[in-house]
Length: 485
Image (tube, rainbow, N blue to C red):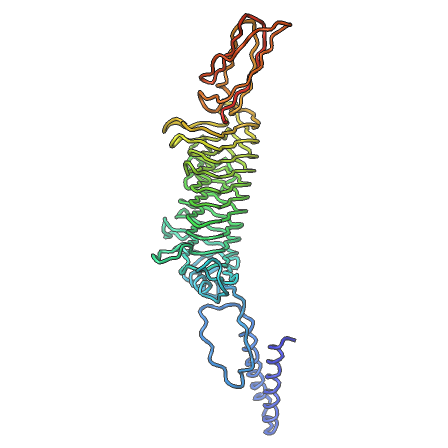
Protein backbone atom coordinates (compact mmCIF):
# COMPACT_ATOMS: atom_id res chain seq x y z
CA UNK A 1 0.00 0.00 0.00
CA UNK A 2 1.34 3.49 -0.88
CA UNK A 3 2.23 5.93 1.86
CA UNK A 4 -0.55 8.36 0.91
CA UNK A 5 -3.21 5.66 0.82
CA UNK A 6 -2.00 4.30 4.20
CA UNK A 7 -2.15 7.80 5.73
CA UNK A 8 -5.69 8.39 4.46
CA UNK A 9 -6.85 4.98 5.74
CA UNK A 10 -5.32 5.60 9.16
CA UNK A 11 -6.94 9.02 9.40
CA UNK A 12 -10.28 7.52 8.42
CA UNK A 13 -10.06 4.74 11.06
CA UNK A 14 -9.08 7.17 13.82
CA UNK A 15 -12.00 9.49 13.12
CA UNK A 16 -14.38 6.54 12.73
CA UNK A 17 -13.29 5.07 16.07
CA UNK A 18 -13.80 8.41 17.77
CA UNK A 19 -17.30 8.85 16.40
CA UNK A 20 -18.21 5.28 17.23
CA UNK A 21 -17.09 5.81 20.83
CA UNK A 22 -18.99 9.08 21.21
CA UNK A 23 -22.11 7.94 19.45
CA UNK A 24 -22.04 4.60 21.24
CA UNK A 25 -22.45 6.34 24.63
CA UNK A 26 -25.73 7.99 23.66
CA UNK A 27 -27.15 5.01 21.71
CA UNK A 28 -28.20 6.95 18.54
CA UNK A 29 -30.82 5.59 16.26
CA UNK A 30 -29.74 3.66 13.13
CA UNK A 31 -30.77 6.48 10.76
CA UNK A 32 -28.45 8.95 12.47
CA UNK A 33 -25.63 6.39 12.46
CA UNK A 34 -26.02 5.82 8.71
CA UNK A 35 -25.94 9.54 8.10
CA UNK A 36 -22.66 9.88 10.00
CA UNK A 37 -21.13 6.97 8.06
CA UNK A 38 -22.01 8.57 4.68
CA UNK A 39 -20.38 11.82 5.77
CA UNK A 40 -17.17 10.00 6.73
CA UNK A 41 -17.04 8.08 3.41
CA UNK A 42 -17.47 11.31 1.47
CA UNK A 43 -14.70 12.87 3.58
CA UNK A 44 -12.33 10.01 2.68
CA UNK A 45 -13.29 10.07 -1.03
CA UNK A 46 -12.52 13.76 -1.29
CA UNK A 47 -8.91 13.06 -0.37
CA UNK A 48 -8.63 10.23 -2.87
CA UNK A 49 -10.10 12.30 -5.72
CA UNK A 50 -7.82 15.21 -4.95
CA UNK A 51 -4.79 12.96 -5.36
CA UNK A 52 -5.79 11.00 -8.49
CA UNK A 53 -7.55 13.22 -11.05
CA UNK A 54 -5.88 14.76 -14.13
CA UNK A 55 -5.57 18.48 -14.60
CA UNK A 56 -8.92 20.28 -14.35
CA UNK A 57 -9.68 23.66 -15.90
CA UNK A 58 -8.58 26.76 -14.01
CA UNK A 59 -8.19 25.18 -10.54
CA UNK A 60 -8.57 27.47 -7.52
CA UNK A 61 -5.68 27.67 -5.06
CA UNK A 62 -5.94 25.17 -2.21
CA UNK A 63 -6.31 26.60 1.31
CA UNK A 64 -3.35 26.40 3.62
CA UNK A 65 -3.33 23.08 5.46
CA UNK A 66 -4.15 23.00 9.14
CA UNK A 67 -1.54 21.68 11.58
CA UNK A 68 -3.26 18.29 11.65
CA UNK A 69 -3.01 18.05 7.82
CA UNK A 70 0.56 19.29 7.41
CA UNK A 71 2.03 15.77 7.46
CA UNK A 72 0.03 14.71 4.36
CA UNK A 73 1.66 15.50 0.97
CA UNK A 74 -0.62 15.65 -2.10
CA UNK A 75 1.26 15.06 -5.40
CA UNK A 76 -0.03 16.99 -8.47
CA UNK A 77 -1.92 14.90 -11.03
CA UNK A 78 -0.65 14.07 -14.52
CA UNK A 79 -0.23 16.98 -16.94
CA UNK A 80 -2.95 15.78 -19.31
CA UNK A 81 -5.51 18.41 -20.22
CA UNK A 82 -8.80 16.86 -21.33
CA UNK A 83 -10.64 19.39 -23.46
CA UNK A 84 -14.09 18.12 -22.47
CA UNK A 85 -13.25 19.12 -18.90
CA UNK A 86 -13.13 22.67 -20.19
CA UNK A 87 -16.56 22.39 -21.80
CA UNK A 88 -15.55 21.39 -25.35
CA UNK A 89 -18.37 19.59 -27.19
CA UNK A 90 -17.08 16.29 -28.67
CA UNK A 91 -20.20 15.92 -30.84
CA UNK A 92 -19.31 18.97 -32.95
CA UNK A 93 -22.73 20.52 -32.50
CA UNK A 94 -21.63 23.57 -30.56
CA UNK A 95 -18.55 25.80 -30.79
CA UNK A 96 -15.58 24.48 -28.79
CA UNK A 97 -13.09 27.21 -29.65
CA UNK A 98 -12.83 28.94 -26.28
CA UNK A 99 -12.78 25.69 -24.33
CA UNK A 100 -9.85 24.32 -26.33
CA UNK A 101 -8.03 27.65 -26.23
CA UNK A 102 -8.32 27.60 -22.44
CA UNK A 103 -6.91 24.09 -22.32
CA UNK A 104 -3.98 25.20 -24.52
CA UNK A 105 -3.44 28.27 -22.34
CA UNK A 106 -3.38 26.23 -19.13
CA UNK A 107 -1.00 23.70 -20.65
CA UNK A 108 1.41 26.39 -21.86
CA UNK A 109 1.37 28.08 -18.48
CA UNK A 110 1.60 24.84 -16.52
CA UNK A 111 4.52 23.56 -14.44
CA UNK A 112 7.92 23.64 -16.13
CA UNK A 113 11.21 21.91 -15.53
CA UNK A 114 14.20 23.78 -16.89
CA UNK A 115 14.68 24.87 -20.48
CA UNK A 116 15.17 23.48 -23.98
CA UNK A 117 16.68 26.17 -26.23
CA UNK A 118 17.47 29.35 -24.35
CA UNK A 119 14.19 31.04 -23.52
CA UNK A 120 12.07 27.93 -24.23
CA UNK A 121 10.52 26.47 -21.05
CA UNK A 122 10.27 22.69 -20.81
CA UNK A 123 6.65 21.71 -20.13
CA UNK A 124 7.70 18.16 -19.37
CA UNK A 125 5.63 16.45 -22.06
CA UNK A 126 2.25 17.94 -21.18
CA UNK A 127 -0.61 16.67 -23.35
CA UNK A 128 -3.80 18.22 -24.66
CA UNK A 129 -6.10 15.26 -25.24
CA UNK A 130 -8.96 15.70 -27.70
CA UNK A 131 -10.41 12.39 -26.48
CA UNK A 132 -11.50 11.18 -29.90
CA UNK A 133 -14.08 13.94 -30.28
CA UNK A 134 -15.22 16.10 -33.18
CA UNK A 135 -14.89 19.78 -32.32
CA UNK A 136 -16.30 22.79 -34.14
CA UNK A 137 -13.83 25.69 -34.33
CA UNK A 138 -14.72 29.28 -35.28
CA UNK A 139 -11.27 30.92 -35.03
CA UNK A 140 -7.63 29.91 -35.21
CA UNK A 141 -6.38 27.98 -32.21
CA UNK A 142 -3.35 30.23 -31.86
CA UNK A 143 -1.02 29.52 -28.97
CA UNK A 144 -1.55 32.47 -26.56
CA UNK A 145 2.03 32.58 -25.23
CA UNK A 146 5.44 31.81 -26.72
CA UNK A 147 8.65 30.44 -25.28
CA UNK A 148 7.34 26.96 -24.46
CA UNK A 149 8.19 23.45 -25.58
CA UNK A 150 7.69 19.72 -25.06
CA UNK A 151 3.92 19.64 -25.55
CA UNK A 152 1.59 17.36 -27.52
CA UNK A 153 -1.89 17.88 -28.98
CA UNK A 154 -3.45 14.64 -30.13
CA UNK A 155 -6.36 12.34 -30.63
CA UNK A 156 -9.34 14.02 -32.29
CA UNK A 157 -10.95 16.02 -35.09
CA UNK A 158 -11.08 19.80 -35.53
CA UNK A 159 -13.48 21.26 -38.10
CA UNK A 160 -13.72 24.89 -39.17
CA UNK A 161 -17.15 26.47 -38.78
CA UNK A 162 -18.95 28.24 -41.60
CA UNK A 163 -17.72 31.60 -40.26
CA UNK A 164 -14.09 30.55 -39.76
CA UNK A 165 -11.73 33.26 -41.17
CA UNK A 166 -10.56 32.36 -44.67
CA UNK A 167 -6.98 33.39 -43.86
CA UNK A 168 -6.81 31.42 -40.62
CA UNK A 169 -5.36 28.04 -39.62
CA UNK A 170 -7.06 25.53 -37.35
CA UNK A 171 -3.83 25.07 -35.34
CA UNK A 172 -1.57 28.10 -35.31
CA UNK A 173 1.92 28.04 -33.81
CA UNK A 174 2.64 31.73 -34.27
CA UNK A 175 2.32 35.00 -32.40
CA UNK A 176 1.22 38.55 -33.05
CA UNK A 177 3.59 39.92 -30.40
CA UNK A 178 6.29 42.38 -31.43
CA UNK A 179 8.54 41.28 -28.57
CA UNK A 180 8.72 37.58 -29.40
CA UNK A 181 12.02 35.66 -29.06
CA UNK A 182 13.94 34.35 -32.06
CA UNK A 183 12.19 30.98 -31.79
CA UNK A 184 8.59 30.83 -30.58
CA UNK A 185 8.26 27.14 -29.68
CA UNK A 186 10.31 23.96 -29.57
CA UNK A 187 9.37 20.28 -29.69
CA UNK A 188 5.64 20.69 -30.21
CA UNK A 189 4.01 17.46 -31.43
CA UNK A 190 0.73 17.41 -33.37
CA UNK A 191 -0.30 13.78 -33.74
CA UNK A 192 -3.28 11.60 -34.63
CA UNK A 193 -5.43 14.51 -35.78
CA UNK A 194 -8.00 15.04 -38.51
CA UNK A 195 -8.21 18.70 -39.53
CA UNK A 196 -11.12 19.75 -41.73
CA UNK A 197 -10.72 23.34 -42.91
CA UNK A 198 -14.21 23.33 -44.45
CA UNK A 199 -12.89 25.21 -47.51
CA UNK A 200 -12.05 28.16 -45.26
CA UNK A 201 -8.33 28.73 -44.75
CA UNK A 202 -5.66 26.21 -43.83
CA UNK A 203 -4.85 23.37 -41.48
CA UNK A 204 -1.59 23.98 -39.55
CA UNK A 205 0.72 26.99 -39.39
CA UNK A 206 4.19 26.77 -37.81
CA UNK A 207 6.23 29.98 -37.58
CA UNK A 208 9.81 30.33 -36.26
CA UNK A 209 9.69 27.10 -34.30
CA UNK A 210 12.20 24.34 -33.63
CA UNK A 211 11.78 20.60 -33.96
CA UNK A 212 8.04 20.55 -34.59
CA UNK A 213 6.59 17.12 -35.31
CA UNK A 214 3.42 16.66 -37.41
CA UNK A 215 2.69 12.95 -37.36
CA UNK A 216 -0.22 10.80 -38.55
CA UNK A 217 -2.47 13.69 -39.49
CA UNK A 218 -5.23 13.87 -42.11
CA UNK A 219 -5.73 17.42 -43.41
CA UNK A 220 -8.47 18.23 -45.87
CA UNK A 221 -10.74 20.91 -47.38
CA UNK A 222 -8.06 23.65 -47.16
CA UNK A 223 -8.11 26.58 -49.59
CA UNK A 224 -4.71 28.14 -48.77
CA UNK A 225 -2.19 25.64 -47.32
CA UNK A 226 -2.73 22.34 -45.64
CA UNK A 227 0.50 22.90 -43.70
CA UNK A 228 2.43 26.18 -43.76
CA UNK A 229 5.94 26.38 -42.26
CA UNK A 230 8.00 29.56 -42.17
CA UNK A 231 11.36 30.09 -40.49
CA UNK A 232 12.69 27.99 -37.66
CA UNK A 233 14.35 24.62 -38.18
CA UNK A 234 13.56 20.95 -38.40
CA UNK A 235 9.83 20.67 -38.84
CA UNK A 236 9.20 16.99 -39.51
CA UNK A 237 6.02 16.07 -41.39
CA UNK A 238 5.48 12.33 -41.63
CA UNK A 239 2.94 9.54 -42.03
CA UNK A 240 0.22 12.00 -43.04
CA UNK A 241 -2.45 12.48 -45.72
CA UNK A 242 -3.37 15.80 -47.31
CA UNK A 243 -5.96 16.72 -49.90
CA UNK A 244 -8.21 19.64 -50.67
CA UNK A 245 -10.92 17.28 -51.88
CA UNK A 246 -11.40 13.77 -50.57
CA UNK A 247 -10.79 11.54 -53.57
CA UNK A 248 -8.82 8.49 -54.62
CA UNK A 249 -7.90 9.77 -58.09
CA UNK A 250 -9.79 10.37 -61.30
CA UNK A 251 -11.86 13.13 -59.74
CA UNK A 252 -14.15 14.90 -62.23
CA UNK A 253 -13.34 18.25 -60.62
CA UNK A 254 -9.56 17.80 -60.73
CA UNK A 255 -9.09 20.73 -63.12
CA UNK A 256 -10.48 23.01 -60.41
CA UNK A 257 -8.24 21.85 -57.56
CA UNK A 258 -6.50 24.79 -55.86
CA UNK A 259 -4.37 25.44 -52.81
CA UNK A 260 -1.08 23.92 -51.69
CA UNK A 261 -0.82 20.86 -49.49
CA UNK A 262 2.56 21.67 -47.88
CA UNK A 263 4.29 25.05 -48.15
CA UNK A 264 7.70 25.31 -46.48
CA UNK A 265 9.71 28.53 -46.37
CA UNK A 266 12.71 27.49 -44.33
CA UNK A 267 15.71 25.21 -43.93
CA UNK A 268 16.45 21.74 -42.62
CA UNK A 269 12.94 20.31 -42.77
CA UNK A 270 11.76 16.83 -43.72
CA UNK A 271 8.64 15.44 -45.40
CA UNK A 272 8.54 11.64 -45.26
CA UNK A 273 5.93 8.98 -46.00
CA UNK A 274 3.23 11.48 -46.94
CA UNK A 275 0.38 11.15 -49.46
CA UNK A 276 -0.97 14.25 -51.23
CA UNK A 277 -4.16 13.27 -53.03
CA UNK A 278 -5.57 16.61 -54.18
CA UNK A 279 -4.34 20.21 -54.45
CA UNK A 280 -3.04 22.42 -57.22
CA UNK A 281 0.51 22.09 -55.85
CA UNK A 282 1.61 19.22 -53.68
CA UNK A 283 4.70 20.68 -52.00
CA UNK A 284 6.41 24.08 -52.34
CA UNK A 285 9.92 24.36 -50.91
CA UNK A 286 11.46 27.83 -50.59
CA UNK A 287 14.43 26.92 -48.44
CA UNK A 288 17.57 24.84 -48.59
CA UNK A 289 18.75 21.58 -47.01
CA UNK A 290 15.30 19.99 -47.04
CA UNK A 291 14.51 16.31 -47.55
CA UNK A 292 11.53 14.72 -49.32
CA UNK A 293 11.33 10.96 -49.02
CA UNK A 294 8.61 8.40 -49.59
CA UNK A 295 6.08 11.01 -50.80
CA UNK A 296 3.25 10.07 -53.18
CA UNK A 297 1.82 13.05 -55.07
CA UNK A 298 -1.28 12.55 -57.17
CA UNK A 299 -2.73 16.00 -56.76
CA UNK A 300 -3.65 18.06 -59.82
CA UNK A 301 -2.13 16.51 -62.94
CA UNK A 302 0.51 18.41 -64.89
CA UNK A 303 -1.77 18.27 -67.92
CA UNK A 304 -4.34 20.27 -65.94
CA UNK A 305 -1.79 22.82 -64.70
CA UNK A 306 -0.77 21.16 -61.44
CA UNK A 307 2.66 20.53 -59.94
CA UNK A 308 3.70 17.77 -57.59
CA UNK A 309 6.81 19.39 -56.06
CA UNK A 310 7.90 22.98 -56.73
CA UNK A 311 11.41 24.03 -55.63
CA UNK A 312 11.33 27.81 -55.41
CA UNK A 313 14.66 29.07 -54.13
CA UNK A 314 16.70 29.98 -57.21
CA UNK A 315 20.42 29.48 -56.78
CA UNK A 316 20.35 27.71 -53.40
CA UNK A 317 18.23 24.58 -53.64
CA UNK A 318 20.21 22.00 -51.64
CA UNK A 319 17.30 19.58 -51.60
CA UNK A 320 17.03 15.80 -51.88
CA UNK A 321 13.98 14.06 -53.35
CA UNK A 322 14.29 10.30 -53.00
CA UNK A 323 12.16 7.14 -53.00
CA UNK A 324 9.03 9.03 -54.00
CA UNK A 325 6.15 8.62 -56.45
CA UNK A 326 5.07 11.42 -58.78
CA UNK A 327 1.73 10.27 -60.19
CA UNK A 328 0.68 12.28 -63.30
CA UNK A 329 2.27 15.35 -61.72
CA UNK A 330 5.92 16.37 -61.87
CA UNK A 331 8.74 18.42 -60.35
CA UNK A 332 9.72 22.01 -61.15
CA UNK A 333 13.05 23.45 -59.94
CA UNK A 334 14.03 27.10 -60.37
CA UNK A 335 17.77 27.66 -61.03
CA UNK A 336 18.61 24.46 -59.16
CA UNK A 337 21.89 24.32 -57.24
CA UNK A 338 22.75 21.10 -55.41
CA UNK A 339 19.60 19.16 -56.18
CA UNK A 340 19.43 15.37 -55.97
CA UNK A 341 16.50 13.35 -57.38
CA UNK A 342 16.81 9.56 -57.32
CA UNK A 343 14.95 6.28 -56.90
CA UNK A 344 11.67 8.00 -57.74
CA UNK A 345 8.87 6.76 -59.99
CA UNK A 346 7.25 9.16 -62.47
CA UNK A 347 3.95 7.85 -63.86
CA UNK A 348 1.56 9.18 -66.47
CA UNK A 349 3.99 11.35 -68.46
CA UNK A 350 5.16 13.11 -65.30
CA UNK A 351 8.51 14.82 -65.86
CA UNK A 352 11.14 17.07 -64.29
CA UNK A 353 11.35 20.71 -65.41
CA UNK A 354 14.42 22.89 -64.85
CA UNK A 355 13.27 26.51 -64.92
CA UNK A 356 15.69 29.35 -65.66
CA UNK A 357 15.39 32.46 -63.49
CA UNK A 358 18.93 33.80 -63.65
CA UNK A 359 20.27 31.14 -66.01
CA UNK A 360 22.02 28.97 -63.40
CA UNK A 361 22.09 25.21 -62.93
CA UNK A 362 24.85 23.63 -60.86
CA UNK A 363 25.38 20.40 -58.97
CA UNK A 364 22.25 18.57 -60.11
CA UNK A 365 21.89 14.78 -60.02
CA UNK A 366 18.85 13.17 -61.68
CA UNK A 367 19.75 9.51 -61.59
CA UNK A 368 18.30 6.02 -61.13
CA UNK A 369 14.65 6.99 -61.62
CA UNK A 370 11.81 5.31 -63.54
CA UNK A 371 9.57 7.10 -66.02
CA UNK A 372 6.41 5.67 -67.59
CA UNK A 373 4.23 7.48 -70.13
CA UNK A 374 1.72 7.03 -72.93
CA UNK A 375 3.94 7.37 -76.02
CA UNK A 376 3.10 11.03 -76.59
CA UNK A 377 6.72 12.04 -77.18
CA UNK A 378 7.18 13.77 -73.81
CA UNK A 379 10.76 14.31 -72.58
CA UNK A 380 11.54 13.08 -69.08
CA UNK A 381 13.62 16.21 -68.32
CA UNK A 382 12.59 19.55 -69.84
CA UNK A 383 13.88 23.13 -69.79
CA UNK A 384 11.83 26.27 -69.22
CA UNK A 385 13.94 29.11 -70.61
CA UNK A 386 11.14 31.62 -71.04
CA UNK A 387 12.98 33.99 -68.66
CA UNK A 388 16.30 33.54 -70.45
CA UNK A 389 18.68 30.76 -71.41
CA UNK A 390 20.73 28.78 -68.93
CA UNK A 391 24.16 30.41 -69.13
CA UNK A 392 26.00 28.69 -66.25
CA UNK A 393 25.78 24.90 -66.42
CA UNK A 394 28.14 22.82 -64.30
CA UNK A 395 28.22 19.44 -62.59
CA UNK A 396 24.89 18.31 -63.97
CA UNK A 397 24.30 14.56 -64.26
CA UNK A 398 21.14 13.17 -65.82
CA UNK A 399 21.81 9.47 -66.33
CA UNK A 400 20.89 5.87 -65.56
CA UNK A 401 17.15 6.53 -65.74
CA UNK A 402 14.90 3.90 -67.31
CA UNK A 403 12.07 5.01 -69.54
CA UNK A 404 8.95 3.49 -71.07
CA UNK A 405 6.60 5.47 -73.32
CA UNK A 406 8.54 8.76 -72.95
CA UNK A 407 11.66 10.33 -74.48
CA UNK A 408 14.88 9.56 -72.69
CA UNK A 409 16.98 12.67 -71.98
CA UNK A 410 20.47 12.67 -70.53
CA UNK A 411 23.62 14.72 -70.11
CA UNK A 412 25.61 11.75 -71.40
CA UNK A 413 25.14 10.52 -74.94
CA UNK A 414 26.40 7.49 -76.86
CA UNK A 415 26.15 7.24 -80.63
CA UNK A 416 27.44 5.22 -83.55
CA UNK A 417 27.47 5.92 -87.30
CA UNK A 418 28.56 3.61 -90.13
CA UNK A 419 29.34 4.33 -93.76
CA UNK A 420 31.82 4.49 -96.62
CA UNK A 421 33.20 7.98 -96.96
CA UNK A 422 35.34 10.69 -95.44
CA UNK A 423 32.85 12.37 -93.10
CA UNK A 424 30.82 11.01 -90.19
CA UNK A 425 28.32 13.13 -88.21
CA UNK A 426 26.52 12.01 -85.02
CA UNK A 427 23.52 14.10 -83.90
CA UNK A 428 22.93 14.03 -80.12
CA UNK A 429 20.01 16.48 -80.00
CA UNK A 430 17.40 13.74 -79.43
CA UNK A 431 19.14 12.60 -76.23
CA UNK A 432 20.94 15.58 -74.65
CA UNK A 433 19.18 17.81 -72.12
CA UNK A 434 20.82 21.16 -72.95
CA UNK A 435 20.94 22.63 -76.47
CA UNK A 436 24.28 23.36 -78.12
CA UNK A 437 26.36 22.11 -75.19
CA UNK A 438 28.96 19.37 -75.40
CA UNK A 439 31.86 19.70 -72.98
CA UNK A 440 33.66 16.42 -73.61
CA UNK A 441 33.94 14.10 -76.60
CA UNK A 442 35.51 10.68 -76.95
CA UNK A 443 35.38 8.69 -80.15
CA UNK A 444 36.66 5.48 -81.70
CA UNK A 445 37.30 5.22 -85.47
CA UNK A 446 37.11 1.61 -86.62
CA UNK A 447 37.77 1.09 -90.37
CA UNK A 448 36.88 -2.13 -92.14
CA UNK A 449 39.60 -4.55 -93.24
CA UNK A 450 43.27 -3.87 -92.64
CA UNK A 451 43.30 -0.28 -93.85
CA UNK A 452 44.70 2.50 -91.71
CA UNK A 453 43.78 6.12 -92.35
CA UNK A 454 44.28 9.36 -90.53
CA UNK A 455 41.16 10.82 -88.91
CA UNK A 456 40.28 13.69 -86.61
CA UNK A 457 37.51 15.42 -84.68
CA UNK A 458 36.66 18.20 -87.06
CA UNK A 459 33.80 20.09 -85.34
CA UNK A 460 31.44 20.07 -82.35
CA UNK A 461 28.43 22.40 -82.56
CA UNK A 462 24.67 22.37 -82.07
CA UNK A 463 25.05 19.03 -80.23
CA UNK A 464 26.50 17.42 -83.38
CA UNK A 465 29.90 15.77 -83.59
CA UNK A 466 31.75 15.72 -86.95
CA UNK A 467 34.55 13.21 -87.54
CA UNK A 468 36.58 13.35 -90.78
CA UNK A 469 39.07 10.90 -92.35
CA UNK A 470 41.90 11.71 -94.72
CA UNK A 471 40.58 9.36 -97.40
CA UNK A 472 37.41 7.49 -98.20
CA UNK A 473 37.05 4.28 -96.26
CA UNK A 474 34.26 2.03 -94.96
CA UNK A 475 34.20 2.51 -91.18
CA UNK A 476 32.21 2.60 -87.96
CA UNK A 477 32.57 5.57 -85.63
CA UNK A 478 31.61 5.33 -81.93
CA UNK A 479 31.16 8.59 -80.02
CA UNK A 480 30.54 9.44 -76.32
CA UNK A 481 29.71 12.99 -75.24
CA UNK A 482 29.12 14.66 -71.89
CA UNK A 483 27.36 17.93 -71.00
CA UNK A 484 27.77 17.97 -67.27
CA UNK A 485 31.46 18.26 -66.39
